[in-house]
Image (cartoon, rainbow, N blue to C red; front, side, top):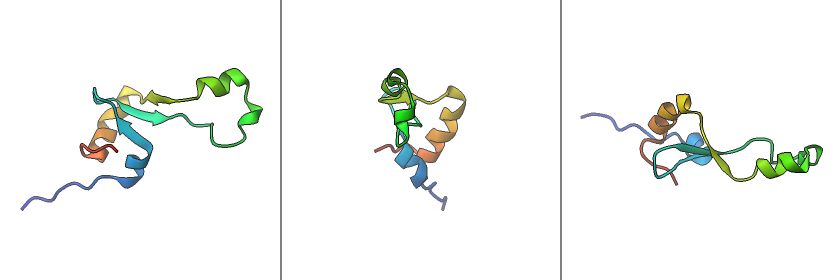
Length: 68
């Protein structure tokens, strides 16, 4: 009997996979103390961005095929 690999819960909360398999994440620096940033910087930090390709494989393995 082989063991199933468990989904990493911390990664599941922080990343989700797009339809093409890219790991998407929320940008840092938006939670608090954002009034010190310029309006342009705050605006550009909105939304989600794709993760760098060198990290995608490990994130996909940790998510084990699941994303919210």
